[in-house]
Image (cartoon, rainbow, N blue to C red):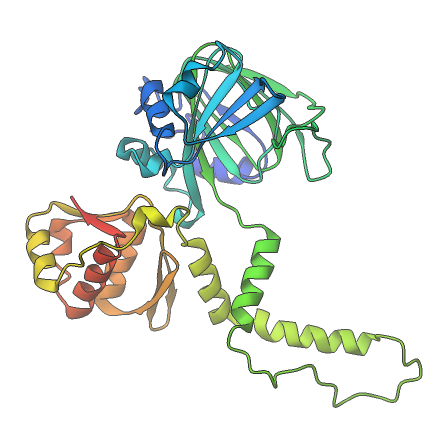
Length: 382
């Protein structure tokens, strides 16, 4: 069953993706939240978990922001209404939440950010705002009124005196009340505001989109890393200057030639982009094992496992080329061919591999790759 109801995925991507909002009633029929409000609050007590509380009527200022980790006393002191708890990357802590990503397989894995879950009592909200990325808002518990409005940008007036990006004058265009199982898709920069009508939880599936500044700065740093000092601007075709203070068109064209030389280097561009997009958001969650396994120990463990799974905090991607693939895992790059390339593609596409399928990859390179990924805590055995 499609999560878009009567709309097929192709139609959604063509007509809605990054274009306009879409409300889907009962995208998840008979939905039961994989986590309850007490468990969500429990996660917010943990030091390694990123969490926030937004208080519309804070004791110090309107739209006051508190950053976790919190304590039980924090929750005991909260008012009965008009606040919201937000917990990031719940998919990396709760496997049942991570399994919800299976319904979004039509979007490349390397575009995924995380699943944030929020809880709010009556009146709870984070204010009218906009995001710079795509998000699917799934109602998990209770009811929330959502309003959508204008297309925003950095020049859109904001409420002063708060670190939150709250729009000063949201122009409401559409409004709905979402019930459990309903889903609202929002493209980037669309103003939106969600207000809890009662105790409610919302699951936000977000997708990362690097800014143009990130792309330019990141690639420039990568492209310049190995350049020699003698690689410099040159103008052997320089003509006698009639206006010596002028930067003329010929000089600009020479600069464009320098830049194009690196921009057209597909290998460097791929290397930077693959490493950048697979860098884990929370690297501490997939830190290398304290005690690395030896090859024999890995073989024994594999024989006792039903599957090998990709760590929820790890990021894999690959690019096909004439010799095989370039494989990226948590910001590291591998040149692979033959069975090892097939294994890496299978892991990237399916986020795991069953023991029966794994048995076909007996070559030395595949086993070496598995051992490295397991010892780096990017794979684990079920």
